[in-house]
Length: 144
Image 1 (cartoon, rainbow, N blue to C red):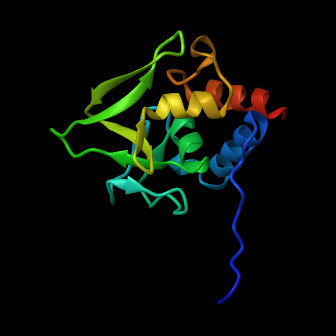
Image 2 (cartoon, one colour):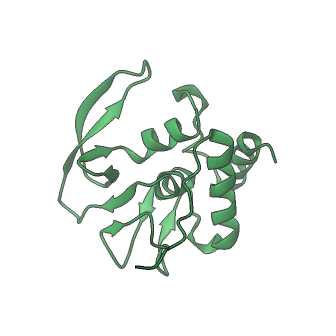
């Protein structure tokens, strides 16, 4: 049996933000704040796989991907039940029709996974901003 080198997943908000910035710098064509996760060649994006050509991930999508979550894009017309977090931090179940993040049997909204990984309260998220603003916020979190 051979040893394989495993890249540890970033664990602190600063390390996560830095990893996201590095990924975006390495694959700028994949970064798009218009889509949580757009995967034209697959319905699943495993955390160990690089996004395929034509894929698009926003800051939250990159964050979930780099922290060990599989991104799932649902085919048109399909829905899945996922766990969400409200503004007070309470969890509830809801149906989504676009996509989500999963790890094992756990399904969560991509935005909730990213907020937790980056240490953000609901009022601090930046998921609905333009790309320059999202990059600025990631740099602030990363301390760059």
